[in-house]
Length: 82
Image (cartoon, rainbow, N blue to C red):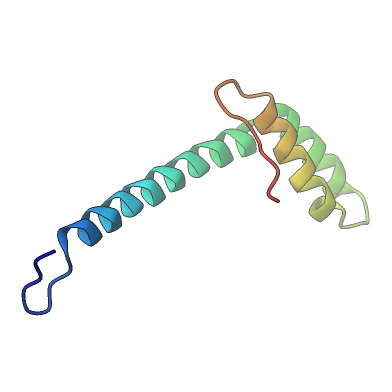
């Protein structure tokens, strides 16, 4: 491995570039999922019914509803973090 003054080896630069691309692609995917989620008519109805009550149950509802929404979307799958 050849290193010049103050420069990272090429292998490190390639890894950092790939990591950046992956993070950006993941961010784009998450944003698209969330935009679809908040625009979904069924989600809006259920959230509205939660908000109309005197309780703040949306914190419990949101992760469950989001998992269900994603599981119903073709080409996406959910794996539980261990």
